[in-house]
Image 1 (cartoon, rainbow, N blue to C red):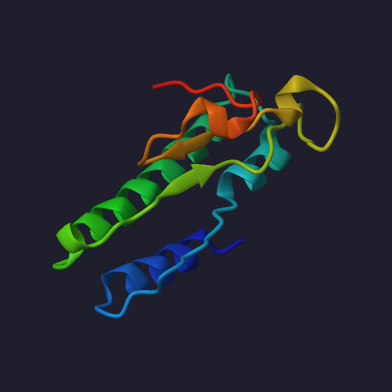
Image 2 (cartoon, rainbow, N blue to C red):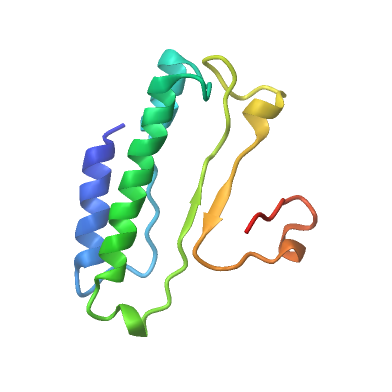
Length: 121
C-alpha cells in the first residue's frame, strides 16, 4: 500500500548501473480508491488515482530511457490491471470486474492471445 515507497525502490533500481534483469511492482492506490469511493469512471477520485498511477509509470519509463546504456538494452515493459471493479468491490462475474488491460512497449500479436485479447494500436 506504499506506492511512493514502491516507486522510489523501482526508480533506485532502474537508475543503478547494475539494474535488475526483472522488475515487478504493483501500485495499489487505484485499487484502494476504488474500494473506498467506487470503481467508476464518473468518480473524480478514481480518475485521479489513474492519473497518479500514469504519472508514476511515466516517471519510471523516463528513468529507463535516461539510462546511459539504454540504447544497448532490450526492455519489455508491461503495464496491466489485475482486475476491474463494480461499485466498491471486485471478484464477481460482471464485465466491469472481469475486464483488464495490458499496455506494452512492444507489439503483442493477436495470435499470441488465442483470441482472448483485443489488440488496440
